[in-house]
Length: 303
Length: 294
Image 1 (tube, one colour):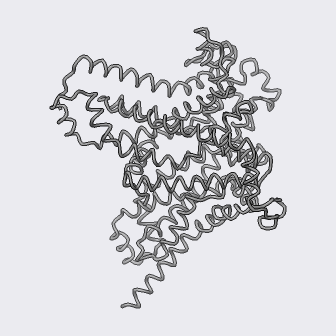
Image 2 (image 1 turned 120 degrees about the vertical axis):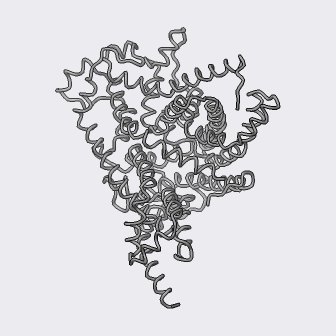
Image 3 (image 1 turned 90 degrees about the horizontal axis):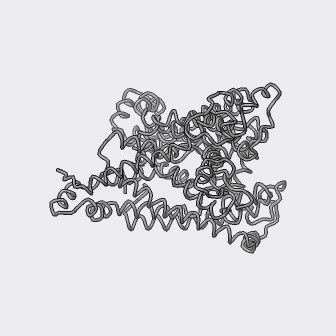
């Protein structure tokens, strides 16, 4: 009896191992391979020598990177853009969810949701093309419209301050629908009897919103804000990379675009990998902290 | 709940409807504007007459892009990429998720495999080492560079294994009583009942492959191998029509960079706009389940 059981298990786990094999091989090559390749951050890397035969130089790449004035600027830009995105990215979807929740007409509500959610699925390439066209200082529809009121054309994508504004605004425009749905679900899960009790006690809609809806959503707001901390060094590569130009590098270059420029364009592989590693290291600390906080504050677990 | 409609409440409700309508228009406007530009004549576009409705309706920019060999070949590359990429990643996802959905008692190495996969969600080698691995494995300039490195998506595996786990264990037991092996059980019992999950993952994956551009840019050497989005990027950045040939000249009077660009952007959006409504209901469930769990 005992023997039969073991034999049966051995047979079936053999099949399980075989099923996992293709995925394991691909992950070994294309995920673990590059992790090993991080060693080039500590080398004076010469591509033709391979990963382990270039000269080892310890932390010199890091020293070089942090000695450059650009680097601090880039870190500053990254933090500025992503913090702004985080703050606005909580307020807008939250507000929209509360307003949508007041709508009783189901068809209208669903239509608004569908429309608001749509930009989420369109690539940043296409959206960049659209933004470049409508924001163009010569004949773009936004500047044409502003022109009607006598404004001078604004070069939205060529002026540092405006560029950041465009980045944050278009980010919200694209991502809004996604978070709104989460907040809406949270509102729907609030106990309806609380509202009835409040209404009996004479609380108006504004008071209900303030004393029931917002406190009821506090856990999910805390959770999403805390979790977004893990992404603090991702200010949006696809978006910035496709919209920026040398004119706005000083206010728009973020860590990911910086890695691309020094790595792929200037071929300084070792230096670029060092910047990338620094980013991963800081992100990792933030992710761990944010999950710990999420667990403490909102009792959230991934698994 | 009986609602008393005071005046201020009414004002609020109407204002809310108006605000939400205006907001939806803001979301739709850029897309409609692009469509209108693409159907308008060059003269009307440069005069700034086009907002949401085509002026001097014509199809010249579409005739131009559909006769443009580079544009059409990049569309073809993108379709190939979607088909290859989606079938590859669905196969790998199902094959990996099934064993991982088994309990530790039935499959003891499960924990090791889980960690093996999950670690890659947290750590990665970054841009340069990844690029070098792809180069070393000989994928450069082939369509495989676009589908193989991203073929195993751990997030999808987790999604799928959670679905498998919610199925009653009796299902599998009865199949195995009848003598079915693991692969057979997966194929004839589990796959048919996982259609909703498979559809979700397939749709996720279609959008991902259709919208990707960065790998096309770094792994492809010749523009004829570019997927559509990568090609669009080169068009957006350089904004020129140097690939125009003599037979196109007759069309030139009525088209311009802007109308052609608008037509290209609109055509590239179409597949997403077409499948998005089907995708939405799965997506909404997925987000809500994934986020409000805690």
